[in-house]
Image (cartoon, rainbow, N blue to C red):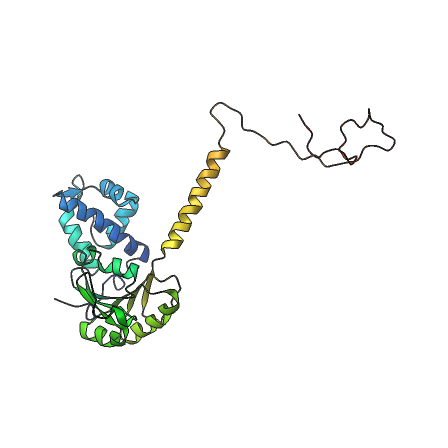
Length: 268
């Protein structure tokens, strides 16, 4: 079985746009679900709907792979699964190390989807000496003192950082120095890496904040939309405050405020 240190995905050399690369896993997930249901072929419209993209964009993306489907038949599901898996480098074994085995790191270690998608958790690493030797998801945790040796011995090129923000850059530097060339960062901080090292950041709090923004906008739109058949309420123009004319008496100034000023907004 080939390891990640000796093989790299061919997407860059073939000139596939990054936006297309980012959508390939969406197509693969949808195709894998079809394959599990023994669906032999799928149209571009059906696959686009399952992947949540536009069908024209899907066809354009697949043209970069040299796959155009068959008119009236669609795409061969099994062949596309293989084709996209090969393009993403998932037809080989990619050993991964996870650094930081707190709640999030432990949850990642227990995630069952790695093995079925071409990734193998080679090691779990943590700075807490009391964690050393404890099994998580059947894998004994190792101390960060062994980080460089672990990476070398297992031929690892992908590292996952699940540490607190304050420790993430130091861990990143050690991973890169040990030969890691791709990093998935769950720490809530921006990492600085040299050229040739790819970093993907997953920040759950940012995603939730974006959702909160959209929820707030939807709530505001609900308030602003008038009932069906009712005219939209138009707020009256502001009326500048002014003083009653000199010499005005009670009859003339019956709408004055307590200080002699006419209120800015008059009662209806």
